[in-house]
Length: 288
Image (cartoon, rainbow, N blue to C red; front, side, top):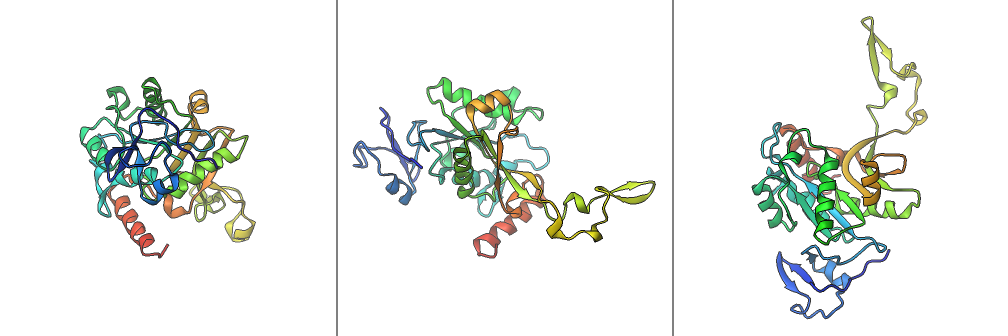
């Protein structure tokens, strides 16, 4: 996996969220990526700084301000940080990602995002900030904005801030999955179906329970049940050309990135936030 520094007329390294030029840090023209990672430095200013197998990667974190189910959802506190901060820090910690932007219509979300190291190069237009606006249109708008401003990329990563239990390793793994499969154009997060497998589901017909698959679950052993997976939403990765052509991360050339079920929990209402905080604490304590 090739990871390298590229020459650029603007070389900015961000150390503790303060911009320095490479010369000011005494690093010369070539930046040691190992030192970059060891010291938790990140690159800003939209420069094509480093690549994965010659591909530049853009991470987009969409965060609309008008959440109705849980007001101010994206900046609600979770284990001491605003919800959106978890996704920003995961993207910044991923060595394959060279630009992290937040797409929002909300100035307060923008302020919080910048304070945690993301770039907010625009406020999302009104037509992309409604309940009916699609995630694909939001991502494509971000891609086009960056390209028009001289920062075109090859791969896009979509990180929903409502999935804070993912880790930087999930983003890296999905990117490597994409590049490691010649017939793959996108990768999405999935998780193994267990207790909600269709083999254990029923319909109600004429007031009686009828097995959805026509076989009573008492006749089945778990070892005999076909492995199935659900789309869990924590990470989406795609070649940008494929996303523009398909207008979806899901198609016949989509591969899975499999995550444990606990990472699939999403914040939609207050109870979700409480459950996710408990899971996050359990992970920090090494219990999961």
